[in-house]
Length: 289
Length: 289
Image 1 (cartoon, rainbow over the protein chains, first blue to last red):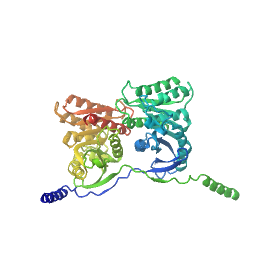
Image 2 (image 1 turned 60 degrees about the horizontal axis):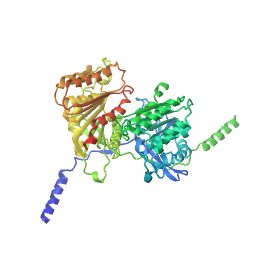
Image 3 (image 1 turned 135 degrees about the vertical axis):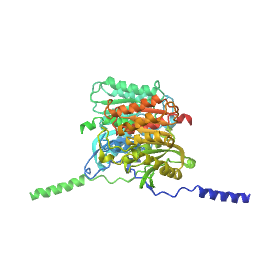
Image 4 (image 1 turned 180 degrees about the vertical axis):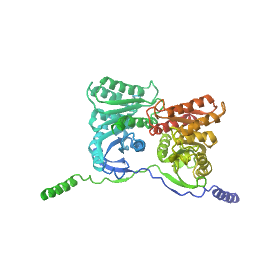
């Protein structure tokens, strides 16, 4: 046994030598466009929050320029993607949209911050007390954005007043809830697969109640869904209903686009939906320059 | 006047105080998923080349895992985007494709490396000697990939044999040229808006000549075009012709998808086309797991 052990050790060391990688290639870290993590204490939320900030590259002729701001909910999921899209689409050889500052807001208590009402019902309408007990804090979260986060961003970075709010799933209903309750906070709203099932279709009902037929709503709105249970699913029907409700309201100056992605899942859809959202929001930008 | 000057100075300093930014927020750099730049000396190209390498995050149970490799041409344009897509789509809560190692190959002499023939004709068929004089080096570049780059990658990183080649524009014809001349180098090919106009439709002609009707080509191929001059443009007609040529060949085991993006430009299209390409190449992956 001892021999065997020794032999194995010898064999192992031989294998180590044999399988050594090729002489090391000269390597250095890849430089991504820099972004930063900023800490902010929220009195409203009674916690420290971090936000991710991605600033456009500016050349020496650009140093006095100011930029619109895109606020992205679920920052840990979609901040990098949107920063990437914005950087690429605003390149001089692409010129499909302006440079933006992108702010990613990662979650601390996602359900608390992104749901508009306190409800213990899950998407099937059944009680799900475990994860939804803290729900209903979206109004406080929007106050945090309006009175703590946005003033800090606007003091610290070279912003213009134009602002976009983008969210997916619970972030989608948070975005729509903001449009309904504080429309003036942002100029454009993106709601990718909004969880319209929340609390017995609260956001759908609120949309029908809040928006006055024929009134003016000078905003842009992109919303979408993927394949979340197929064409007969409640998820799809809800989003179709949002589309038809908006159509019936005949709001003046609201420009909106609904896109359905039947081949994408709830989680793959944001990649293509956020791209289409940026293309929609800035569809006339190149002409206006 | 002196009073006015003094007063202005005073006013200016007051404004400076008033507009001072809020107390500096605690800030730290944002951590992107690390990638590295690897230098390799190419004897074939007689130059130092850098390549970008993005490796999947592995947890402690994953350390012996090996990964397919996606090689991306025009690395400075599309490496970050594809690394982002791959990371996101392979997340445990998304699970739309496997983790991949992504290799971005930035250009040194783009026209030399990515065009299959020496030609001085531009896309209108007119001489453009200034930028195309060095054209026609794609065969040498593919040899560099096959005999220098890929062996280095495979020695240095935990790879499986499955490999994808992806390119846009000139990179698109390079990808197709590789499929026609060295099909065994990769398992799947992506050609986003390939410049099929190159040298009097050389790649289209070569496709018609090289592929034997009814023969076996066990590969996957995604190709696409955007709005590059509209539906009657030669650019679109060429890509449609590639599609019909492949259809006529009735190749067995070739799975291919052609997508047309009439609302995207030559430069915005890669964002959505590369996403659709990954979704196509791995469309049955989730089922096969």
